[in-house]
Structure formats: structure tokens, C-alpha cells
Length: 346
Image (tube, rainbow, N blue to C red):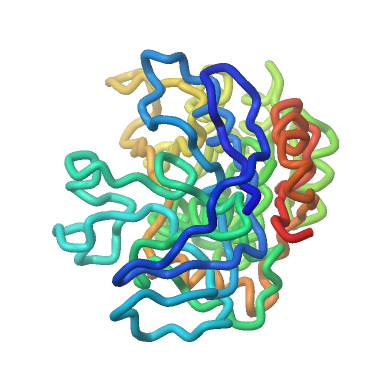
């Protein structure tokens, strides 16, 4: 089968031919229909040798959906031919967090060497994918695979981040979304579908701000040196009850800290390496700062249900598997509107 692999430090991903996987006891083989392309992949491929620890080759793709192609011995609850989505942040299945369905916060994953597909384990950017346990698959139903693949991360991650702040997103409140690309344009829709908050979107790209407005942002602000002042003016000087930074670099976290309201939630989702100084007088009183990671399996089910209701529309650009390296180039250059999706079978 064809697979998209990262094979050497500092090198672009390659399309290669590898053996088809076979399902062992308890395992499932998927025929992959669609795989999302994410900035997290680029971050991994930019790590220096002393930081990178996943081994080579690494088949990329942590957003995947597909059709059950084969079931290993003992697998129940699935049928060959069924369409499913892959729950990416896989854990041990038995610790206290996994028992709550929060495998994204598994307490033993590092100890046991458990990594998500595409982020350590073989990923979805291939014609077939091996799933270690059926619990990591969620029925897709009648959802379009191309639109559904990004929901497993670009939908799930902002949903998880927003859900914890729902008590503050009451009528009259404001939510600020910084970065309106793959995750950010989903966050805007989730906010509009689940809250009564006014949504202000920030980005450095006018094109992405147009997308933000198209998917429901009430206000759009260019993310430049004047962004903090602009948001403060839009909120009557009070700031926003919830600020979600999907970029996470120094300038954006500084903006986030500058626009959050007293008793607000400042949530840094982006992995750009920026930090928020926390201490008396550095941010408004009683602000909560968090760095959430992905989401629970139950939340993925909720995201898929939200999409099934028509509340979420994923803006995608599709690429064949041989075009996957180009998709990464365009994503790195900021030229993808919404989410890039690779179709391993055309």
C-alpha cells in the first residue's frame, strides 16, 4: 500500500510503498477514506534530532476515517464495511482518567510508550491503517468522510476547550478566537452552535478573517499591534470572558492576556511555544489559564452528533495521496483555507 511517511530529520515527508497491515487478536484494519493534515505534523517534522523521539519511519496522519476492512480475533461490536472515525489520543484504557473516557489525559501513556496514530504510532495517511483496539473507533454513520476526518482533531480539540468554559459563555458574554485556520474556524461554529456569546475572531490573514465571518464570527479584527486595543474597544473596555488562542506563539498569547476579562478563561490551544506570565498584577484578577489537549472519546461522539445536526461545516481542500507533500508545503506557507484532507484512494 501507499503511505505518507516522515523518514529523516529535517526532510520533507515522502510517499512510499509499505506492506499492508494485518489484524492481530483484538485489532482492526481500516481502509482509510480520508486523513486530515495538521500543523502538529509540521511541528513534529521541525523538531531537532535531540527532541524527536518517535523513531523512523513514521506514517503521518492523526485525523482519520475509514471503512472496516478486517477484524482480528475477538473483536466485537463492529462489522466489516462499517464507516468509522478514529479516536486519536489513545491511552492505556485502565487508569483513572481512561476510566472516565479521558484517554487524552491518560496517566500511563508515556510510561507504556503509547502514542497517538501519526504522532508516534503508524497514522492514517495510508491506504490502510491498523487500530490496536476497537474502543478507539466511533461510528461515522452518514457523515461525509472528507468533512468528518478533521472533526477528530480540528473539531474535537476546540470543542473540548470550549466545553469547560460554557458556564462563562452566557448571553452578553464575549469569546475571542485567535487564529481562524483549521481549528479556529471550527471553534467559531462550535461557539455559535452551543453558546449565546458574541464571537470576535483575530487572524493575521484577511482571507482567513473572511472565512471567520462566513462561518459565524460577529466581529473580525486583524491580529496586529493594535488588536488588543480594538478588542477592548469592542467590549467596552472590559475584555472577553473567554479567550481561545489556536496559535500559541509569543505575540498571540500576549494579545490573549491583553484582552481577557476579570474572572475570564484564557485557553492556549496552539503549540507555538508562547507562554503566559501568571502572577499578581500580570493578568486581570482571577483569570484561569489552561492548556487543554485534544478531547475525550465521549466528546468526539458529541462533535460528530453536532456535525450530523448541520451545525458544523468543515471547509476543506482535498489532495490525493501522491500530493500529500504538497499539502504540507501549502499548510506551512499558510495557503490552506480551512483544513487540508488527503484522500488515500483518490
